[in-house]
Length: 158
Image (cartoon, rainbow, N blue to C red):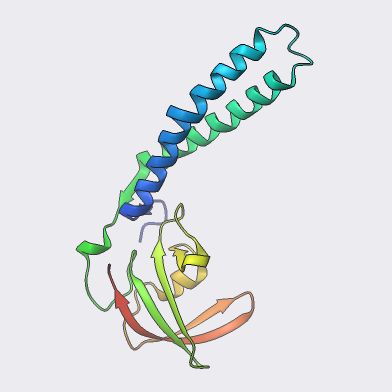
């Protein structure tokens, strides 16, 4: 995989677009109104509404700029169009540990990872160890808690 690409699933792309639209078409316009109202109240140097509003506008503008760039560079990979036993971007991988525990991860883009939901970034150490492997392979995972050896039990694209 190309390390410079912004790989993303269709679900992740939809979430980025929703955040962009919320900021640009809801939050920012409301805040512009508040800042304009606060500015009309005189001395801006001691006007908390104005100062907070301007600061929040800068934060929104930075986030919008970031989202715009990420959306422009996004390369969508739809797991529904993929198949096979090899671990690739967007795969949902079922692993078994030496202790007999089962772990399930979906390999997703940097902007959509959520460890609590089992979604890990394709650039994470765990995903990098799994990418390219296939069902039945034993993989060494180096984690903060130490090394684990896992076996790939299943690879799904859903």
